[in-house]
Length: 429
Image (cartoon, rainbow, N blue to C red; front, side):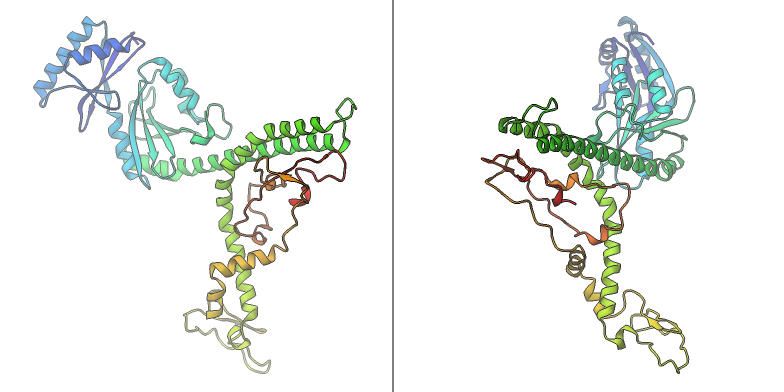
């Protein structure tokens, strides 16, 4: 491609659209402005002319002006990518906004390659082929951003990949990145492929990346804490020299300086992972509440079909709510959701009470000795956890457990074994 180049394409609503590129793309901008073209917010230019004759005259004038500014002009056989992006965005679930991006200078394309969160063909195309423009599709609620580009070497196909979510930073080389897919030039089929194939893979990739980030951060916090604990318990440096009170304070600050960024990373990604686990935990707590409430109901309501062993078995009968009671040789058990007692037991307050009561008594906080708050540091982040899937103990935990503030002893010597540790493993199991 020349140092300055102009590509002409046709937009459904915009008419003839001109896009400037090359290392000397400003020459192309000058030629377009002298030809009377109007620049829009995306950085593209629209040629004047309301009919075919006026459009031909505008193109001829642009070519003559471009020659004076050492700029080449070519045409694209594809429709304007902004139209393709908007057509697809209208068919995707949710609210999606389409925008055109221009990479006039080759360096801008290199910057794009560093931010692509992709493990497929789109990354290879951006790294090896000159791409002058692309379009982004952004979901207004979640912030999910997809990148749509023309597939190099093909007349009609497109490539669709993703940009990393904002908390992740650059996405190049990430082993969790989803693979880009090939889209046909038909908006309906393209939107279906995105909805059924790419978006589910994208959600799985985001979950895996968050899980790996939190797990690695917790591992680093544990490593730093174990090293700090070993030093405090021994009361000596690694060379066996005694550890003074001032040195102990310095070691505490060193531990905090190393652990604090990891803690912030946990706080940034863990809430989304916990939201994934919460529905399963609520379902288990609800089933537990149902069983407890069923045990408190009167026999006549709990077992409306209870019979004497000498009586013949009865067929299932619907109750007033329309639910059937399934009978067997031992009696009947009502289906979940029947009876006023169950309805009352399923209220949110009752569910929280059941969840809290099953969690057992709260553990005592570490003893205080001249407490001075240094930094808030929830101790639950040091507890061994598995974020890949909810565990069986999730239902026994309170649905919302507030983290407690971490405090450091002041004016006391913590070098002795009887001094409370700034991070007491007895507090988190």
